[in-house]
Image (cartoon, rainbow, N blue to C red):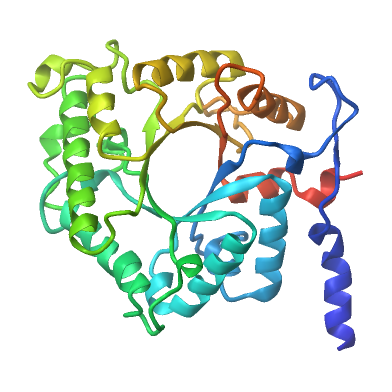
Length: 347
C-alpha cells in the first residue's frame, strides 16, 4: 500500500487539470486549454517500445487515468485511435476505454489506413476491408471474446488515414504485388492515385452498409493541397475535372475531412485555405490539423516553435466570432504530452 501511495503521489501533478501560464500573443495573462469551446481531435497510436502509445494505455488503470486527464485538459472531443490488433486480442479492455471516453463526451474513432490500401487486390484494398471486419464489425458484434457491445463501448466513427502521396519509392521498395510500382508518387500519377483513393472510400462505405454499419460515419485525412491545380494533372483521369470536383465527390461518401496543414506556420493562411474549401463544399465538416512535434533542423515540415504560438494558432482557428469556427485536430498525442506535459508547464 505504501508503494502505491508513493506512485500516486508522484503522479498527482499530472492528474490535475492546471492552468498553463504563457505570454503574448494571446493577449491574456493565463490560458486554460480546457476552456476552448471547440472540441478538438487528437491522433493516438499503438507505439511499440515507446511511451504514450495506446498499447501502454489500454488495460493499465494508472496510464489510462493520466491519458484521460490529458485529453480533458486539451479539450479533446475526438480521439483517432490506431489500436493494431487490440480490438481482437483485448476486446474487453478496448470496450472499457471507449466507455471511459464516451462518459467524458469524447468520441472514439477507429483509425485505419495505409497508402497501398487504395489499390484493388488481396494485399491492398481487401486487407483494409478485412481489418474493418475484424477490428470494428466483429468487435462491435461481440465476436472478439466479449458480449455484443453497448453504444458507448463501440467506436463512434471510422477515421481513415490512407495518404496516397506517401506511396513513394523510398517508402515502398518492396510493395505488395497488388500495388503497381509504375504508379509511385510523381506529378504524372497524382490524380490517378487519388482517383483510386475515391474508389476505396466508396468500397469502404459499401462494405459498412452491407454489414450492419450504415449509420457509422467515415472521416478522412487529406493533404491541404489536394485541390491545387499546380500539384495535379486532373486531365490524366477522365472522372474528375479538378481537385474541387474530386473533393465534392468525396464529400458525398464521407462525413468529415481533416486537412493536414502541417506545412503552414500561419493561422491566417490556414483559415484562408479552409474558408475556401468550406465555401466550395457547401459547409462540409472539415478540420485543420496542427502538428505538435518539435521541428528538427533537417525537416521541411513547419511546426510551432513555442507553446504560445501553438495555442495562439488554435485560438484563431477556433474563434467563434469568425464566420466559421474550426475545431482543430492535433497530431499527435505522444508529441503533445512529450513536448508540453501538463506538469512541466503548469504554474
